[in-house]
Amino acid sequence: MVVEERLEGLGGWLILVALGIIVSPLRIIFELFPLYSDIFTNGYWEILTTSGTDAYHAMWAPILLGEMGINLALIFAWLYTIFLFFSKKRAFPKWYIGIVLFTLIFIVVDAIAIKSVLPDEPIFDSDTVKEISRTLISCLIWIPYMLISKRVAATFVRQ
Image 1 (cartoon, rainbow, N blue to C red):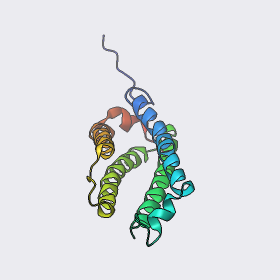
Image 2 (tube, helix red, strand yellow; image 1 turned 90 degrees about the vertical axis):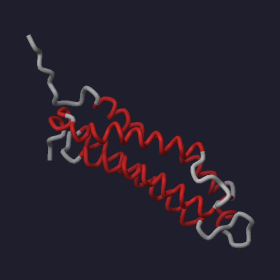
Image 3 (tube, one colour; image 1 turned 90 degrees about the horizontal axis):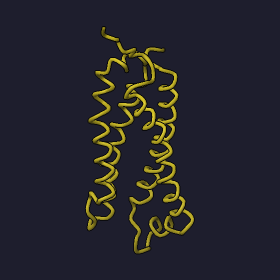
């Protein structure tokens, strides 16, 4: 006797997806808030963005403000994606795919931008390589899953 698995619902591998989308905005907050807080409270902003200082470069302000803005947008995008996920909205897989691809592109573009300011530093330091690898592996696993999984197709059906 063959028992057919019920594919609709937030079960199976989607539990790992749920964990990932819940952790993602928290991770951004807990990793970057202390960094950005230090930039503004310890005088680094002035050192990096004031003409005439040793560390000044005209691109520091746009890069740092861009990073902060994009990371803030990513936090809100992940929160919206969490809503889509638990509401079982049809848009969830597209939002998820979009965010993980955007994140991968953002990490690479940000590394290139920083390289333009710090030409003597390696473009892909160990932290950047770790982030690119982690995000790339996530893309390689979860994007195909979102596109071909019967559970995903059966679960995310609400307008």
